[in-house]
Length: 152
Length: 160
Image (tube, rainbow over all chains, first blue to last red; front, side):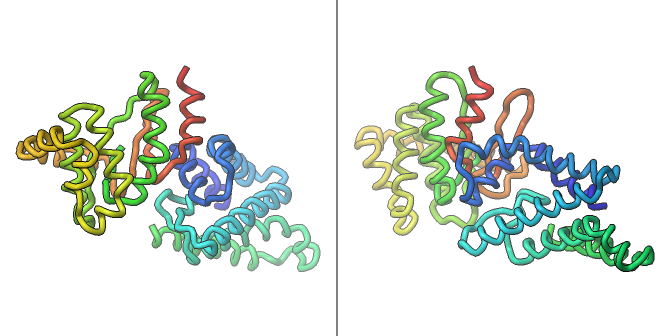
């Protein structure tokens, strides 16, 4: 499910790299010279993460990478919001203004990545019977997905 | 591109991005810019501003860009006090201003604006500026402002 989220977000950005470039420039953070290359290549990073999460290859490393990416994104969005800049998030759609709700929604998606990254440790400490935590993680992703749906 | 003259973002987009594109690319035949009027309902003078630029277009390219520049550069003033006539008069001079005023009586000006609004609605334009880039066999819809250096980077990659 988490992989699907990354595949979706990468796909919508590939449909219009120029629109994604407009979103990136709206953050008033990146130099103009890197905006277009970022708009072309970043969606492929998301798609690669999505595929790797779905097939489960080196899941812990990939989940850590996804967690790092999402954390960076949250910091950028929060920074943009608290600098008083009126901008779009660009995560799940291109007309999604940055608000505390969108930041909270995106932050929720970090939790399943943390779970996937920490699963071996959890298994060692809690034993094999930690399925209830997995269910909570899935529930959080579903809740975030529903929040996305209502907001759109 | 679909634009509203009373929209501050459209003003910024025209002055900082479209104007240099017209100068550096369109004037050399590398990029074609098609400008569509899309006056938004919430703006008191934008329909009138659209009529002025439509009429200026019929006078000629030089007159059209002069009116476009004047309306964008003085947007804050005429947005407050409605001084469109004064702004356009100063941009064109007396002779061409009065020619423009005669053209404004032609109902086809308003019909043309209506057609462009209808086209925008059909293309799901909900806000301004919204522009569509047609290049390398695909259409990309962009809502909002794109800085000139980014668009220049894009054009330089595809236009020889």
